[in-house]
Length: 238
Image (cartoon, rainbow, N blue to C red; front, top):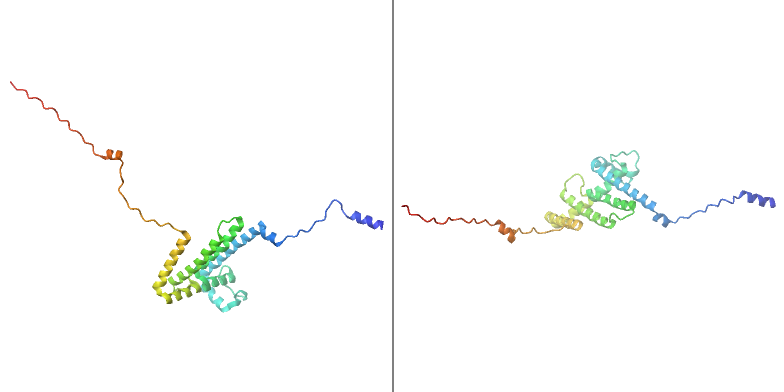
């Protein structure tokens, strides 16, 4: 027994301490600065990929649209299906969903949402207001989709998307073309004032400049006094 106890003492190194397993909670991981930076860069990449997918769809929609319709819900999982979008089938499906079935060209405004959130997370500061960007983005989605669908109704490309075309047709049936155009003008002008808050001033009436007494004296014409020679007495000629 004594030998066994001695062997146990020899195997243990007195100078080294056994490492303790550190438990990290989910809350600590979420609050970690490194997590914020990783999430920020991921959101920036997402905004860039979304921009590429939508931009590429504007040039390749004619080649990819029939393939999306034929494949239907299985478009992302069909084998041996080639598309022309720069981001492949995922890009073609994203562009078809957000532009054709969604808001048309106004869908590009959605790229700003992950961009704003990503920049704030990377720098750890509130450089952009997320809530303000959300308000402007969704109001811009509705307005620009309806305006583009109303302005370009017979175009082959879906400039306003399904949402804009539906709203434009409904308003045209309700108010007519003139009423819808006037409503869109007022709505766009109101959105511009709400977004940029311009200052309107009436032009000032031009008035004649008033001169001070000193300036008035300088501008008066100088009166030159004529020196009249005194009458020379006529001398009688002898």
